[in-house]
Amino acid sequence: MTIPTVVTSGRQVPPAWAVRQRELIARMDRAAVPFTQHATRPDGTLIQRTEWTSMDGTDNGYEAFLSFPLAYLLGGAEYLHEVGRKEWDAITWQYGSYGTVDREFVAGFDWFHHSESYTYIYYLALADPEHYIDKTRAVRYARMYTGDDPLAPNWDAAHKMIRGPLNGSRGPRHPTTRADWEYHRGILSGYLSPYEDIEAPGVDKSDPLFRVDWTDDETYDRILAQVNQRMTRCDVPLNLSAASLVTNAFLHTGEDRYRQWVLDYLQAWVERRDNNDGIVPDNIGPSGVAGELMDGKWWGGYYGWRWPHGARNIVEPAFVAGSCAVLMTGDLSHLDLCRSQLDLLWAQRKQVDGVTMVPARHGDVGWFDYRVPDPLYYIHLYYLSQSAEDLARLNEVFPDRSHFRDMPPGFGRGKAGVFQPKPWLAFMEGHDPGYPDRIIDATADVVNRSMDSLDADDSDPEERHCYHFQNLNPVLPEGLVQMAMGTPAALYNGGMLQTHLFYHDPLRRRPGLPEYVAALVDGISHTHANLQLVNTDPVAPHPVLLQAGAFGEHEFTQVTVTDAAGVSQRAVGDRYLRVELGAGARVELKLSMKRFARAPAYRVPPYDA
Image (tube, rainbow, N blue to C red; front, side, top):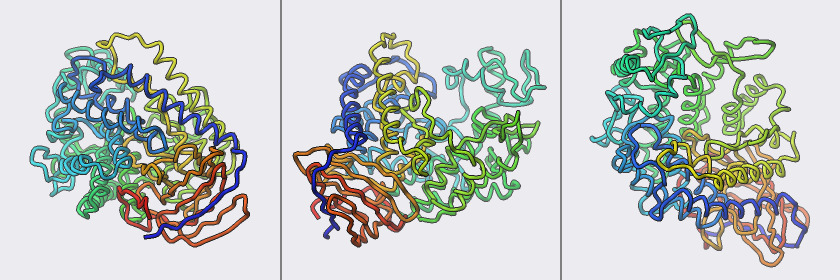
């Protein structure tokens, strides 16, 4: 096999964004060291509480370091990969000793939290596709949801449902106990009541957002009894995010049964929507019937339409499962479940003080809690499909996108460095030529803020809350991933990293941009990606191996090269393209491509071809 190759040379002064991108990658490499030393013991365990009894919080342990393998995939130091893998193992052991992890998987919690932590292993698999443990773990984890693990009876094959919203290596978590919810009683008191018919002191049921006091023991016992009676034996839309875990097994093995499980489960929810007047119900009882344990109500389930997150936990899992199905089949119609719920909410829109808002929740009063639409899912839909249909949705809901370029102070700070993709989209649409420098500024700012917080942290380990180390982590690569790979990045809660472009270093035989090489994708469509590559090193050449898609799922068909020698063109017809980037060279590539044209997989590229 001979990989098509582009050769470019001729030293040029590197643009400022390229020099700054490489400097920022190096800064995060350095910042990772004191963070790791502060947060962990020599064995890798987190320096935090010696006991952890709540079912919540395990995900936050993993989230403290999940950005490390992602930064490595961008081109960060080997240290990031080494620590990232060590921390996965150490945190798994640590929470196993707490009792919240069993057989290396969370014993029983919901997929809002599972999906946050297990994104970590998808990055590890991309970082080292042939690691001897990852594949066996992927298959073991998937078997917990496909009905093949008798110790984790989560799957009901007859009804094509997951048998409870709290699930994991020990199967459905039913019933739940006081200890399971203890850690978050104060937080849950700030949420609206989980049920509208609950009797508790001081309740004003005329307000659809009425709350009850979880910290009151009598009320707590009453809530817990109702939760166990109504919630913990239902399938919920949130469980659709398990599709990414099963897709992970497919990417390791190529076995069709994993793909078919995802397609079957997604279709089951499509049918539930169709049987409920186009609305995805948020609770499916043990017999496979919507509302079976909720007195016939299709709303009121765990993390469902009445939950504080509301519509988010209907739309988001539908996108995660649909995007996994698209990755494995190339069929964009699998995004329709997500589209239908966004359209449903948009159809319920109304003007509130002159602002168009959509409902986030539904209860006995009907639709309520109107909010400004969130562009996140519209952006992800449009990115993945690159279709006129999804662009039309985006244009209808957000006709004025001038504010998308805004990056307020602290942009990117929080949840392991999530950078909202609105500014990235503004750049892709040609509305913000200054984006490269501004996303670098924003990233550098949150790195600095994290380092300041790290320096000031003298907290008592026994008092550290579950989010503690996430807030201190200075390795925040997502903005640079958007910039370099032509993607809004992975959806944080369970999304796979789907991209137009992915990079390998053929000399160091590893994923990521080679040393000194900077990348900027400044245009994408269903048929192409525009890429600038810069070798900031004026002394030595640095070859780059381009891959079409993070999983090699796309194919380069043709490349137009613009460099110091002029403009040239050549056919490709491969998922790989090698660029011999000479010392100090700069090149612009228009890469024509067929998306979803090849089988996706975790694979080591042919470095020697």
